[in-house]
Each structure stands twice: as structure tokens, then as C-alpha cells.
Length: 204
Image (cartoon, rainbow, N blue to C red; front, top):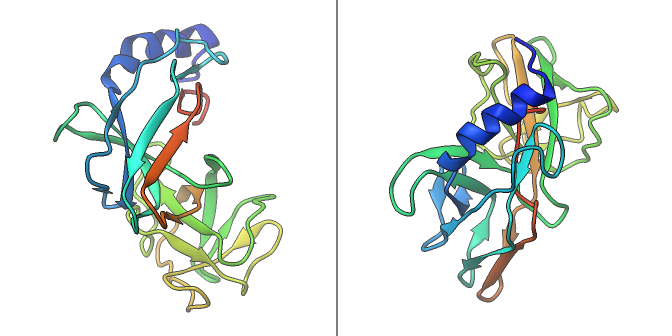
């Protein structure tokens, strides 16, 4: 059912307390970098916009030298607990796009109008409305966008840079997320400003 702004804010008021910690991932399985979970506190529902709540304070997630980060994740506990969401990460910022894009079995393409992706961008996929991912795609794989099949409104993906297109064998809708992996040459932090993390019920 469609929710009004007040309805989205009411759900956030009730549910945001469950998202207690954020961490950094070295793989989408999800596999966390060591000792990275940081406690998150949330703005009042409706901040910074209706249907959203953002983090109230800046966060610094410590990362060791030589570690490659491919995403972020929300958890409901400091240790163990449940993985609640996987987020894109990278120097270009957190990008969430492509809700409800459709895949084509015949051409192994993902149709997404004005997607803005370029060759070798990294993307991962999520489900839409609780449906399963189209056969051939995995939610735990960070894919490469291929030059072949890349148009303004469509793209194909591979497991390696310049590799063969992933064979999509089932129809369906997906959401896709661009992430920018970063290898830390020396120990440092992922610094997240206020409202850099969003719980957003306007997404779906």
C-alpha cells in the first residue's frame, strides 16, 4: 500500500531503533573488516526529509592498512546480531539508483533508463518487493559493468573487468547499487558526516 509522508515517518519512528550499528564490509557475503562496528544514533523521523532519518553525529569507522572496503552494513548489535542492510560505498558517495529495473534474458541486459554507469563501474543487485533475484544474478557479488551492451538506458555485467556477460536466465525486476571499492594503503577511517547514513522509506 502507498504510505503518506506521515505514515513513512511513523514507521521510521518505530523501527529506527533496531538499526544500532554500522560497519565496513570487505565482501558482500557480508564479511566485515575487523573491529569496525560503530554505534549509530538517529534524527527524528522526517529529518533530513519526509520519510527519512539520518545519523545525528559524524562517525569514523577504523580500517586497517591493506584492507579493501566494498560496502557498508547495518546491524542490530555491537557483536554478532543480524545483518539488516548492505549499503554502497565509495569516493563518489553512496549512490542508490535503479529501483524496479527490468532484465532481459535474450540480451543479458539490465534495462535502467538514464543509469549513468560507465565501463568498469562496480554494481551489486537487490530484490524488489520481496521477489527473488532473476536467475543468474547474485546479491552477494560485486559485478563489473561491461563496455559491450552499454547504452544510455541499458547495461550488462561481468564477474571480471572485460569478462563475458553474466548469463541471466530468469526474468524479473531488480534494484542496483553502484559502489566504489577502496583499498586503504595505510590505516585510516571511513568518515561519515551527519545524515550520510539514511534510513529512507521513499526508496521503494
